[in-house]
Length: 55
Image (cartoon, rainbow, N blue to C red; front, side):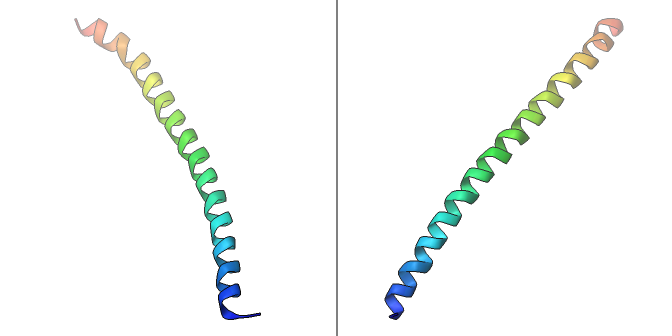
């Protein structure tokens, strides 16, 4: 096995791994955004009655 073929093999491995990581990151990012919007929505709904009472 020559050095160039070893390099190409490792490059393929890195490529497939980065694809997997990208997919995982996208999924976790999506879940994180979902959680953030859910928290914001809940916080806004709990804060609204306080605003209406103060007016």
